[in-house]
Image (cartoon, rainbow, N blue to C red):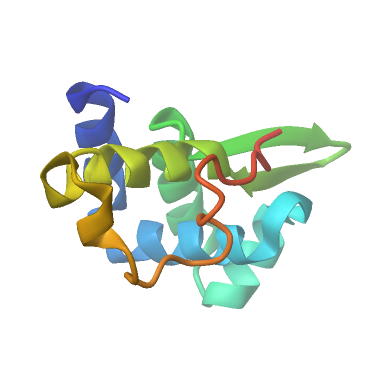
Length: 118
């Protein structure tokens, strides 16, 4: 990941609503949710949600697939893992032994993380 991509991702997540949407979709994993389910879960009006879904999709944080009349959104997990790797790339000044024992979420501890993106 490069600095420009990381900046775009962080700018997109700087909204509390978009952060809530992304975290909800991360929780759903590869199944994702349709827009109406996201709106219901977060008690958001559809017009407000549409704006945020577009911003997250343009930033690459979400993928979207048309399913009949509905659009199913999924978190781009691989991008999230890449962002985390970018943030920790120089952790402990390149001395991995200094980082031993730090709590790493199980989903990310394999190093490459899952690729749930559609």
